[in-house]
Image (cartoon, rainbow, N blue to C red; front, top):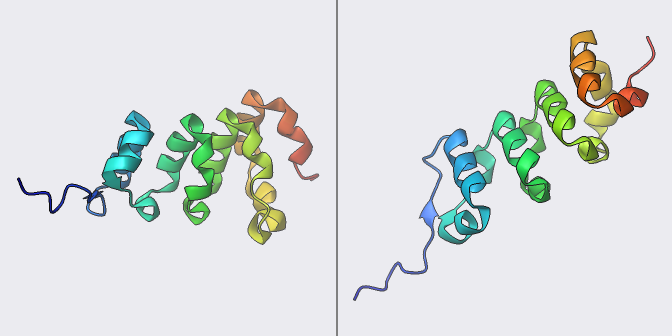
Length: 120
């Protein structure tokens, strides 16, 4: 029996972001055990899908991939992430980057976040 590769994980660097996210969402523990997950290949939209269901993976997220739109979508589902971003970009104006439509969509689901809306 050839045991040479029994302990090696399957490479995911050739997979699209959505495919990697699907592997993680199907069964994270199994995916972590059997695949060399290419975390850096996951885009913001797929991070929203992952973090909505598995918020404990936030430390694996490449936050530079998460757009303003992705943030609004994530906060609609997981308002506890509001305090996660403390970097300078967030402090310097992420809230200001949201337009009236973004705010309406966000506050429809999470009205308690209105306190973060900058005064006009």
